[in-house]
Image (tube, rainbow, N blue to C red; front, top):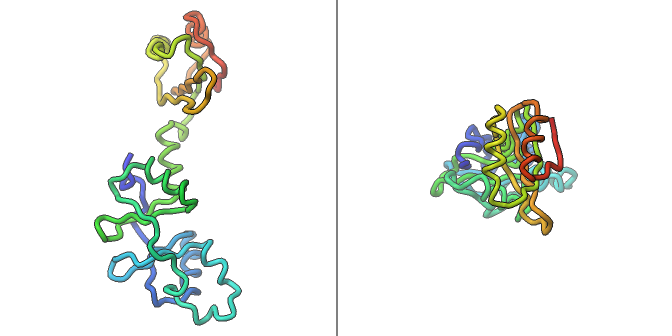
Length: 199
């Protein structure tokens, strides 16, 4: 999953000489929290709702310009970067969005909301589904479990696994909505342990 497929391309931007009041107005008008500051489509900085909030009651609010308060050299991402790498940057730097630059041109912005949408779709959480949490009797036997599911008419949407647990790994198998009882019975007959069923 690439950033370019999930980023917002129709951008609301602002110039460095605009007033902070105008930036606040744009945020409320378009229900956004990040506005790239540009000059001829070249990114100069970023203003965010959280960094503007501190100026709401500033004694010189009327005279403050965007260039006075913008974040200089914001963290950016390439449109061909993976959603995973964008998510790591947002988590590492505790920010809510990343301007997307193709060479030096601003082509979009990707926010936590965009990334969440991508992961929800990837995991199949945007449509009705069922989930099995399974501890395999041998880590090599995931294919056996998936074959059992398919033989019982199940269609697998996604498979995940705990990455850091020191106990036996739990595999999370999401599939299209189906009666799970015969599948659970068949899986357990092969010696695997079904620890949770979400129907």
